[in-house]
Each structure stands twice: as structure tokens, then as C-alpha cells.
Length: 393
Ligand SMILES: NC(=O)C1=CN([C@@H]2O[C@H](COP(=O)(O)OP(=O)(O)OC[C@H]3O[C@@H](n4cnc5c(N)ncnc54)[C@H](OP(=O)(O)O)[C@@H]3O)[C@@H](O)[C@H]2O)C=CC1
Ligand SMILES: CC(=O)[C@@H](O)[C@H](O)COP(=O)(O)O
Ligand SMILES: [Mn+2]
Image 1 (tube, rainbow, N blue to C red):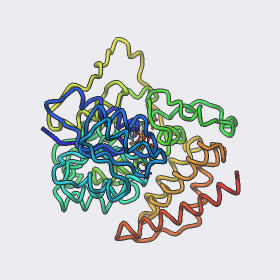
Image 2 (cartoon, protein in one colour):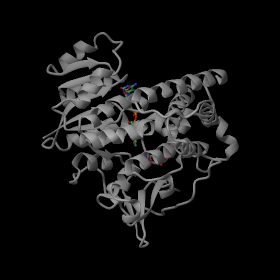
Image 3 (cartoon, rainbow, N blue to C red):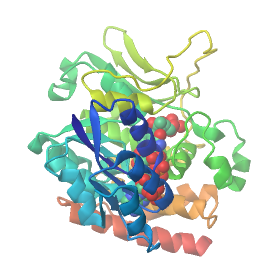
């Protein structure tokens, strides 16, 4: 029986993870779940899973919550705060940690899971964008197993040859990693209408049902930019060994091209339970509750190159990765602030890229050898981005 901690249980990935786990009660037990603000869903999850620990990132405003948890699951210990998040990520009794908190808030618990040698199922791509080198070093040194849950990276992992990361690229037979992206809801919208885009429109992804932040990132293609950086760290490749390919149907989740002309693709319904089940069961396969693709219903698969004028955030991510050091962390922090301001209707959709770029221009990438130094850069970038948002709001 595998004991699982789910960081971000109340989110889209968290809910899908609990769905897959519930299908396999003989294989997985929920050790701990964590949440931030969604107390009503969290309470239901506590009742259903009866975990040993339930952790809230911030103390609940509702003072009855402690009593409600006790009634729902008398054996569950309710804890709050960042130390508790790290404790349930590194506890001796835990085998698997699903890292599914959104944004930089997920970094420290993910690091805790990696440094204590867990099987880490990584959805929280921002952790790798901020601290890719440090996180990958922790994984290597602790003997942790890091499996990508992000659908594209999970697809690439499935398509790559065994032991890919431990060989020189030229010996692997791989010629290119092809990272697919849908282009989001505004792939064909005239550019002069971008300024009027609302949060509701931006969160209405054509294929995937996801949290608000990643949905906006998909609309700007910042998501694909973060994923480029994520892929380079995960698979130890350079940006020149990877191409971004627009594929609006999200049926192919990414591909690997080989020197002999073969291209291996991973396909499936756009349903995150597939990569989640793959990560939970790896190296085996289990039922995820996902219907197989019916190819007679898939009418067509389209591919094209992304247009960087339409998606300036994608260009910013390439520039940040090229600048290196703390620049990806700076871009990530600026983007978290600008997306939040857009969702709060403080700034326009087009301001997201403008603010991200302005923050990158105002800061200098710094070599950071500790998480604390990276978080200092993250904080500085947030302050500058917040000021810029306030000026526009
Ligand atoms: N959704 C998807 O299909 C995919 C998501 N990902 C990645 O997975 C991660 C999660 O995404 P998604 O599930 O969509 O996001 P959601 O917004 O749906 O969920 C986020 C989760 O994180 C919790 N959370 C938010 N802020 C904090 C905080 N400050 N401290 C601790 N916990 C916090 C939320 O708690 P609460 O709700 O209780 O406030 C919730 O449980 C992201 O990094 C995303 O990029 C990657 C690929 C696909
Ligand atoms: C499901 C998943 O992995 C998301 O990251 C998804 O890729 C978003 O879709 P885009 O391709 O539009 O960014
Ligand atoms: Mn993805």
C-alpha cells in the first residue's frame, strides 16, 4: 500500500488525483491532504479520505472549522502553516507526494519531498522554473524519483528512450523534443480585440478544465514558456533541442523525434487523470477512468508554428531562460502578480506581458545558490510588478 500526500488537494489536479486514488483502494492510501482557502471542499475530502493529517496553508477564518474536521474524521490531525506543509511532504511514512499547489507557494513543500527521497509527482511547474537546478540536484542527491505530471512532460517521458537523461544527447538517438501547445482560447482572435479580453474568456480553455492561473497562462502561452523551462530541467536538454508546436486539438500531448525519422507521440483524451495515473502507478499502468480515444471521432489533427506577436509571453520565457540565473524566477514572480491582477480586473489582458517584460528589464539576473536567495529575487520581482499593476489599476 502506497501512502500518498496530496499538496493542493482542493485544486483541479488535487481533485483528479483523489479520483484516481479512489479507484484503487488496495494500492493507495491518502496520508495527508492540503488546501488553502476552499474549506468546504477540503472538509468533504477529509470526510471521504480520513487522512492522518489535513494541512491548511493559512489558518482558517472560520473558527468552527477545527470542530467540523473533528466530527468529519476524528483521527485526523489538522495543522496549519508552511512547516506543516513541509512535514507532510517529508514524513517517514509517506511514499508518494503529489506536488499540485499552484505557483511559488508550492516550492518549499516540493523541495522537502525531493530532499527526503520521495516519489515526487510534479504538477507544480513553477517550482522547476524558479529553482530548477537546485530541485534537480536535491532529487539526484536524495535518490528521489521525480515524475512529470504536466501532460506534455508526462508525454515526453513516455516517448523518450530509457535512461535518456544519463546519456549524452548525441548518443540517445533523439533529434528533437516536440512540445505541443493548444494556443489557448485566443489563437484566432484578431489582435486588436486582445485589450478587451475578460477573465471569464481567458479561463475558458478550449480543451482542458484547469485552475484559473494556469488557464490564463495558457491563453498568453506563458504556460508553454514555463513548460519549455520545465522540460529543459527535467530532461537535461537545451532549448535548441526542443521545438514548440501549436496543436489546437490537444490530442497529441507531445512528441519525440528520432534521428532515423521516427516520431513517437503520446496521445489521449485531454484528461489529467491519464498522466496522474501514470505517475501514481509507474512503472506499471492502472485504470484512470478515462475513455480511450476513438480515432473515428477525431476528425483532424492540426499543427503550426506559434506566432510570437500573438504570444509575447512565450518570447519572454525563452529570453528569461537564455538570461539564466534568477531570471526565470523573476519572470515567474512577475507573471503570478500580473495574472492575479488581471483576474481581479485591475489590469487588461495585454498588460500581463507588458508588466512581465518591464519587471525583467528592471531587474538583473543574479546567480543564486540557495533557495533563500532565489526567494529574495522572487520577492523583489513581486514588489515591482505590484507597483506597476497599481499604476495601471
Ligand atoms: N490543472 C491542470 O490540468 C494542470 C495543472 N498543472 C499545474 O499544477 C499546479 C496546480 O494547478 P491547478 O490544480 O490547476 O490549480 P488550482 O488553482 O485548481 O489549485 C491550486 C491548489 O493550490 C492551493 N493553493 C493555492 N494557493 C496556495 C498557497 N498560497 N499555499 C498553499 N496552497 C495553495 C489551492 O488551495 P485552495 O483551492 O483551497 O485555495 C488548491 O488546492 C499548477 O502549478 C499548474 O501549473 C500542470 C498541468 C495541468
Ligand atoms: C493539461 C496541461 O498540461 C496544461 O499545461 C495544458 O497544456 C494547457 O494547455 P496549453 O497547451 O493551451 O497550454
Ligand atoms: Mn501542460
